Amino acid sequence: MRLLVVGASGHLGGEVCRLAVAGDGFDEVVGAYHHEAGGVPGVRWERLDIRDGAAVDSLMRTVRPTVVVSAANRLGDWVAIADGAAHVARAAATVEARLVHVSTDVVHGGRPQPYGDAEPPTPITPYGAAKAAAETAVRALDPYAVLVRCSLILGDETSVQVRLCADLLAGRVAGALFTDEIRCPVADVDLAGAILELATSEHHGPINVAGPEALSRADLGRLIMRRYGMSGRLPLSTVVESGLPPRPREVRLDTSLARSLLRTRLRPASEVLARGGAVAVPS
Ligand SMILES: NC(=O)c1ccc[n+]([C@@H]2O[C@H](COP(=O)([O-])OP(=O)(O)OC[C@H]3O[C@@H](n4cnc5c(N)ncnc54)[C@H](OP(=O)(O)O)[C@@H]3O)[C@@H](O)[C@H]2O)c1
Image 1: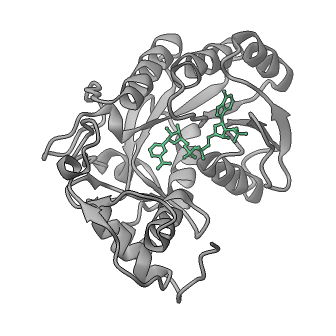
Image 2 (image 1 turned 120 degrees about the horizontal axis):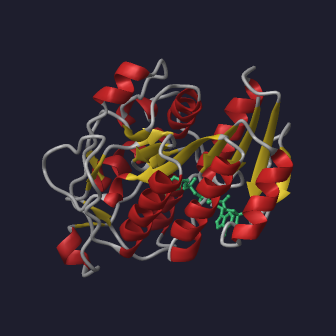
């Protein structure tokens, strides 16, 4: 079996590569990057711009993967997010590869009740709309693809959420963590394990893959501070006080299907962030 990870130089793509190389399910792991190859040993790196449909077709025909994980992302770039996902789905279908496309919880607009797996998107941001368009294209081009809707991805001290807390505390960036924006954060390694399991499952269509614990960004920040031994006062605000354009406030994902299908345990954020002693965050 050969795995192609698109967006392999990114946070989630890198984690998927690491797990795939460490396991015995794949004979070869090919990682596609846009600007700079990732650092995971054992991966064959290939440069690719998914906005270029012909380039995606060409790489797919050369690599001939059994499984494709589509995990590229570029905030603010509709063509990369939506057209790029469509190019990958079309090319994967052409070589009859199994496709796992990574989507997001913010295809939803937010409400107090948890969202089921198959609920149609209700985006309220440009990013959510682009990811929703990507989902629609992927489903039309490859009805057997898996669409993983995940929430905030937690990682080590170099990851986005941890860096954000360190930067806010040090005054290196402006802004605040919202007390009223609720998400179900998921550990990168749990999500990557779930993606690789889903790749060899019978499931197709959307599936929620997120942690079981719904937290505000402010509470997540407090857990990160405790885990990494950070001190100081985190700047906090509500979404309205921030003056930012409307964004999904409460997005809880019902993950009962994922939990019944998968051996990978989707751990709560407080467990993920309770490990070990304090680790220094590089400034
Ligand atoms: N991070 C989160 O909290 C979160 C939450 C919900 C859903 N997700 C979803 O999870 C997936 C992975 O997110 P992530 O945070 O791991 O992303 P990331 O770290 O920002 O990585 C993005 C990846 O996409 C690649 N890329 C960007 N534009 C490209 C293009 N035009 N052609 C080819 N590759 C391109 C980047 O390549 P280079 O680095 O080489 O330029 C990089 O490998 C995305 O689908 C995202 O929507 C993420």
